[in-house]
Image (cartoon, rainbow, N blue to C red; front, side, top):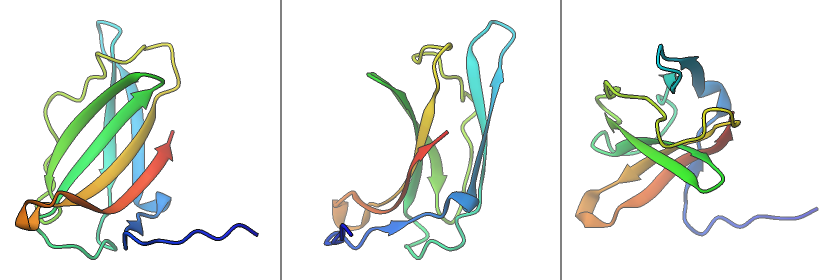
Length: 111
């Protein structure tokens, strides 16, 4: 069995806490609607929450405010990602205290 050592003290966000629905806009561009329950993440309330959409070399990052005040951006269109592809998402909680920008919690490879 392969062991993984966690020197970063980064916690995993449970997949059950994240639901992302894709929808196609009237102009054919994909957009997403997330439902996040980050109450299990133990980080400062001022930590920033980001959702990143990616496919191969295409990548977009969306700022969802702070852990204490989640606010979805108005424009969640995936305009820079190929609309015929399988888009994957990752959720990151970043602690900006002391200007370190340290990822304290993450969930990766969400389809």
